Length: 145
Image (cartoon, rainbow, N blue to C red; front, side, top):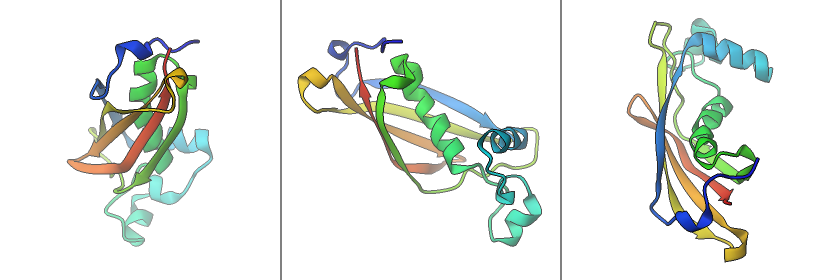
């Protein structure tokens, strides 16, 4: 599947549609099963508190994956992402209630990278949860159509 966003239609400062991703304890258990990461800090409140965490926290890779969905949904092709990296700055705390947590992600085109024939741009992402930035230096390089 080819990228749907054309290189010519994008400029530095272009904002991608923001998204919010709900996270519940059930979501974390499902992710643990899919990823094989059964660390009890992601599902056992008693254990999380014993090791000094404020509560159960979302897997860092889960948070990272949810954030990049803003880019893959925008570009229309996950294969168009040629590079992606983040720094984990704060955990996403997931309370054991009916609301859980919310990861709010916004993004914008920050730079044209490489040669024009590469048709690549850098997208900077901001991921927040409970008013705190949970990913730092979150950047993706995307090849456009």
